[in-house]
View 1 (cartoon, each protein chain N blue to C red):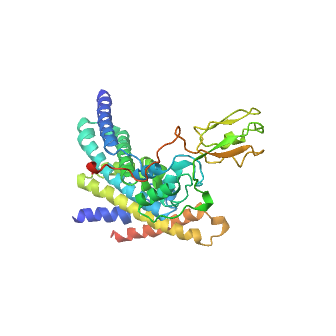
View 2 (cartoon, each protein chain N blue to C red):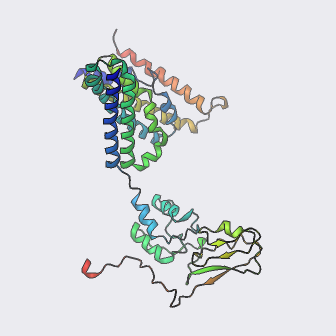
View 3 (cartoon, each protein chain N blue to C red):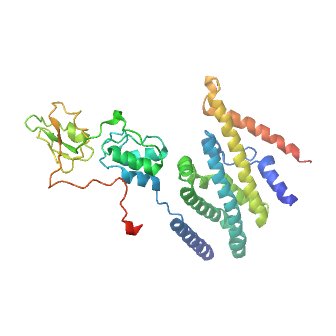
Length: 193
Length: 186
């Protein structure tokens, strides 16, 4: 149990995929303008990431390794991710048309979110088992959600703030992201060397 | 090499089957409330409610952006039916969008004065006016919904409203405000 807790803590805070590993920056900047959109995106990504992490582990362990096709991993994982995202899109369209409208193009774009492929490949690299892959994917997603929601809340405040002209718009957002990243680097102090 | 092709092919086919099944399982039938509202509206597509056609107005009502009393062609009957469907208070027709008519009306072009400018043709939402540039225009009265949108653009004021009084030949039973269910079917 401690192992899973550590995986969660590691992926959410210490090795946060967005702010420490710098993966998935496109949706991080793109969907963080409004809090509601960010929450919807966070939910959809959490679902996709957990599911794709587990299913890519299964594909790897039961199809690729027995057949000796490890070198086809990337292509196979992309296929798995594309299917999972398509499936999620259908489910969201059916269950919440409003969320479907709000997310718009970003929902299919989860396919190209590098966190999704990153998690699948890191699972293989770190030789994770089934449960470890599940928690690793889920933790990465929760970390992404946490950062995305925090960042969008900050951006909503920045919109009404008096920002100097040279920093207005995307530049202040990027600077904010940088400062947040610095703050998250502080979590590496949690690990005793 | 052959293993790769076969494996990828088989996996792709399996994924395709899963997606195909879920496409049927999670089929979206569209918003039923919008369809119900749209069915009540008179489908004159006149735009007097300020929305592009009855469908747009139905969507606006469903979203809560528009009030239910903006449809002059439908009049009181439509407002009562909408209030019943959406469970809100009945309110009088909003005068800003036009008055309810006692009799259905159509427009007629005074063909002596028509200069053939085609402005009324562009305004007509149901394509009920035929004619070409510098040719006399005329209204197809069976298609005209009486929305009067062609009257403001006419530069020579040659379009007149005429009431269609019901006669034995063109009388149609009024659409019931609520569907009639026979006693034995209840």
